Structures are given as structure tokens and as C-alpha cells.
Length: 423
Image (cartoon, rainbow, N blue to C red; front, side, top):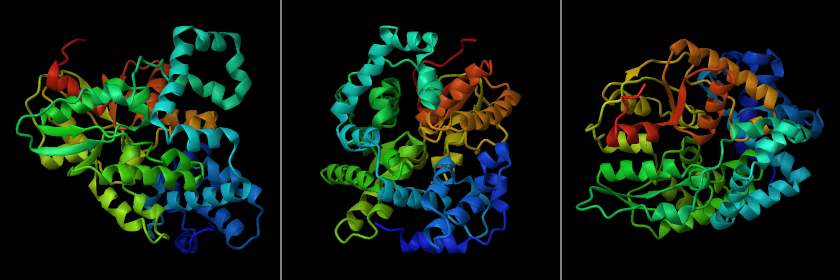
């Protein structure tokens, strides 16, 4: 569909004040004017509204954006830059089409959890057979450019039986206080089953009855590459799955998933049948930190004697405005010395698969984050997004920092079940 009227209005609202410079991670490391929100908006407006530029002229500006929305915090008009960028990407893809890889990923793998899990086993096979290590040593990874450089960001794949195995970890709770559906997400189901197990244990600790439906991908990866049609199909599957559930909330510890799930209403704004269904679904979505604080955090924990700092995932802090809940949870863990990191809400450069297409830019943004991390002298860096965890862990290793990177659920699970007095 053509550029929406809502986005066209937003494009006209920018008065080029430049306040967005203060919040743009890319501009901070490049100093290039078109890297700011006002620069990108002006280029998109010139190409798609005023028709003074060719589509190819805005391809780099549109796909270079991290879509972190940190610029919105500084915009007097409150222009939602990510919506504009996603709309421009959709228009570009509508005219140019998707690559075969994108079609396979967004239309074959992501709608099919079992097929996606089978594909993830190939990474496990490459790890256990040494193929991935051999490819690095022989220089084969360099032949695929940025993707080859960035593959080291993805840690070794664990053994995983997928969504069905995660569902089997659910226990019956006597006299439950709440009932929720756990939106596991693609990453936890295939690359981080320990996070899924920790999430279920934490919910059980709060006397929450848990169901694990066969939700598919939230749709954010497809939308991020401009394939809104695939994102809508994934959303329809999730909405239909949720309608059969008798739950008070749909909970996930992934800030990116919860953010996009809450925006399902936008996907169907121009349709007749789906907006109400989408709004009902989105209204039940809760980030796990948000849900736990809302129902009352269980503070019966063991001691974790560590210095801890926190990185705000962009989709949690800038899109959902969830900032205090994760900090509240961390500060309630006995023994933790919490230290705030400078620019904690600045993007780490992960932005989904950004490094696989813009490795050098991603690393420049990450370097700034690592400089701030080093100044905290923290033992543990906590965040609420698997993409951020991988990026930050890679950065700490790359820069020789001793800080361990973990998800909030893993730290909380540690406090509930074992404590951590080890050095």
C-alpha cells in the first residue's frame, strides 16, 4: 500500500530544529547530518512526498537508521521517527520487492515454529562439528562481508528441543493468583532455552499459572525490513491463537517482542475486521518486568553480592516507556550494588540484525557503550532483550572487559533459587 496519510503528516511536522542530534547514536559516532532524524525525515519527504529524489537516493539513509526512537525523547513535536522509517522501508520494498532470503525467512520460517527450530539446528551442527570455527580460521566468513564479520556476535547454539520442550516445563500451581500466556519468542525457543526456563520458574514463584501457546514470531523482523504484509500475517496467527486462551495477560521478557506486540493495532488501522481484535490482543501484552511489579514482586530472595548495572533496550525504554520496573527488580535483590551507567538508554547498536548489514557502524555505537560500561566497574550488565545481550556480551569480550552480560530473568532466577556468592 502507498505511504500512509498518518506518516505523510508526520513527515510535514518536522521543523528541522536539530534537537534530535542529542539523541541519535549514529550521529554521535559519525557527525553526518543526514544520519540525524531531521536529515532522514527530510530525505524521505523529498523522495516520497515531493518526488525530488529517486528511491535509490534514500535507501542508505532509511536502512542505516537504528530505529531506536531515542531522538523522540528530544523532539518538541514528538515525531515518531521509527514509524516514518518503517513506512519508508515498506514503500521501498513495495516497489523493489524482497530478496529470496527475506521471502524464505519472513514467509516460510517465521510463520512455522517447528520449521524455524529445524533451521536453528543447523547452527548447532556447525558449532559441534567445528564448521563455524573452521570458517573463521580459513577466512571464509570474510567472503560474505558484514554478515561474516558479525556472525561471531551469535554465541554457540545450545542444545534445544524447541517450543514443545519449553511447554513441558510448566507445572500445575496450587491456588494460582494469576494466569498468563507466555510469549516465548523465536530466540528463547531456539537459541536460549535457559531464559525460557528461568521465565517459567519466576512466574511460578509468583503463583502464576502459565500456558505456553504455539505463538509465531512477533513480526518485528519482517516489519524492520519493510515487509509489512508478512508482519500482518504473523500478527493474525498470534491474535487468533490468543483468542482461544483464557488469560489475563500475555507476558514476555523480551523488550522487542513486547513492544511490537503492543503495536498490533497500527498494523490493521486501515482494515475493517482486525483492528478490534488487534487492540484486544495488544491490551493484554506485558513485559515481564512490568507484570511482576504490577502484581507485586516476590522479595524472598537469596543474596547476590555483585555490582550490577543496567542497559535500557530501546524497545523497552523509548517505545514502551518502561524504565523503572527493571531497576526496581534489580535493586530489590539482596546484596546487589546497583550502579547507573552513563547513557544507559542509548542504543547499543544491535537493532535486531543491524550489525549483519552495517557492521562497522554498529561497532562504533557499541564502542561508546563499552566506554560507559567500563566506567561502572560492574560485575554484571543486565538488560531485557536477547539482541542486546548478544551485542553487549560480544562488546565486553572484544574490549577485554570482565563484566558478565545477562538477561534480567537470569539474574532474578539466580536470586530466587541459588544466590551467587562466587567471585
